[in-house]
Amino acid sequence: MRPHPDDLMPPLDLEAVVDPRLVEIPPVEVLPGTRSHFRLRYAVVQGWRPLELDLHLPLGADVGTGPHPVVVYVHGGSFLAGVPAMGPWTSLPAHGVAVASVSYRLSGEAPFPAAVEDVRAALTWVAGNAGRFGLDLDRLALWGSSAGGYLAALVALTHGRPLGRVSDRAAQPSPRVGAVVAHYPVSSPADLRGDATLSSPAEDDALATVMAQFFDGSAGAVPTSLVDHISTPAPGDDALPPFLVLHGDADRRVDLQQSRRLVAALRDRAVPAHLEVVPGADHGADVFASAPLVRQALDFLEASWAGGAAAADPRP
Image (cartoon, rainbow, N blue to C red; front, side):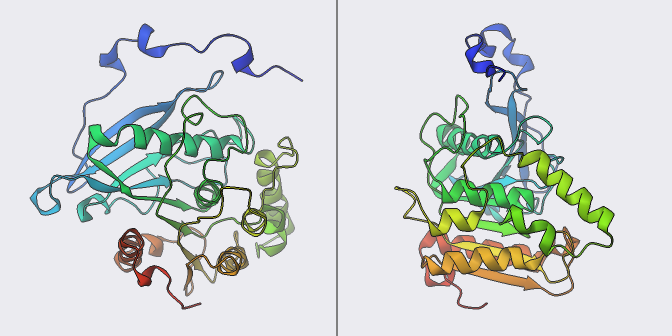
């Protein structure tokens, strides 16, 4: 087995060798009511590219000066592709909610569970920079779509319990999140191909190949199913946040059954969890970024952060 890059040489101190003017780009105003800081480095993992996130802060008199609640958003892309600019989060800053949209190591770079530890490291960075950027850690949430929904959920379910080799940031304690929003998440990778209703055996085979690149078996006994982490929690996993899961009933790639299993397992643990079934919506449909569904997620987050009963929506 090849040695891990961390074992080959001490980590390179980028701050010591790079002109700081080239590292941190001045913020810009691109989205309405938003000041955006792009490509903020949140972790360095020896042997890979520096890991970065984009931080989008509320701007304007109507949202106040903060500290603002913050969502750490994890993009989708089958664990193989995607960028932080993706996702249904772009209107959140105008509603007074900051967004840290995260890049992570994709399956062509590192297999499971490396990306899980990257997202955990991003949470730690947000906690460490909350004062600098006016972020309220008492109102912190994870939000992810598809593969990102899987990663966001798994980080919340395994708070403070690394599943793999950690980065420099993830070696420090990460904050607990007060809520999780997941759009059409993968929850049981082993069942994904059997659940899917794709158009041909070739598409089924392609999906299985994509998943096998990320879940390549190198993590050994680490469970890949979210349900397994919920039903057999490790010590310290007893305080789970409420979940809002949104999934289309016409999703051919990640079948609705994936979310049904997740929500059922959470409810068995008495964790507040609501599944919103979106009629006629396929995987990644534009409706998930529509104003009504974003408003539903915002209402859920506000209720969860406040500890209100609305977080435990009793509907199916």
